[in-house]
Image (cartoon, one colour):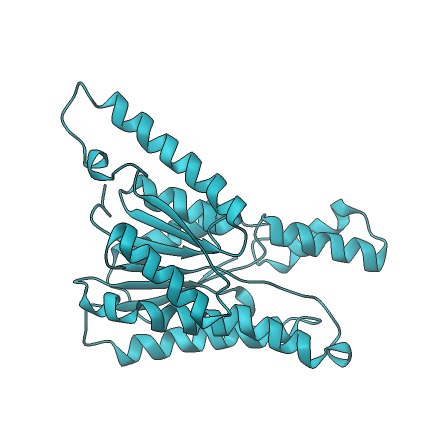
Length: 270
């Protein structure tokens, strides 16, 4: 359990990549707070993690005591619903997280949203909405967690950006602008706090086989008349590997960054 004693906040922790990261960090012994706008999904993930820890503890009762025995009645997994675009909600959620598990030592910025639309049809509202969740949310969470992260011996920020934060694609200008901003913010934090124990890195996956990709496929089929299979194949071709990435590949990169002293990196997984 390489993360025993750590407290990780994961935004967007109720589905896809966020849920996969939660499972991986829980397996390494971290206490978790799952943050997101849909409490029912967060609770579903949390219940599964609590059940897994309870079974693990039960199986170890006749053996040597394991760290999981110190997680408490909620098995070290709590839920703090919040919209990361609203600073007051972020502050409230992080206060709730500290009350449950103590200071924050790991922040995973995973909450995000995408929209495909021609540049000429982008409205000011859509532009702001995409920047709010994909960039402003990262800013709010980093700033809210910063005092704890700097006080920790090994504070960690890992932002789930996107390959769209490293290159450009058609029909996704707001998302691409926001993700480039998230990567830039990560690099700025890495530089500013390089002399401390805090590191900041980004993971930049291509198209991942998650709920967000399902939504992208639905948009493609609705607008082009292509089959679901053809739409998925088209998205897979946009990845250098020629296939959709699975969440566990992203999770492995996140865990590697948390456990290492690497800083200021934008790790591409595509």
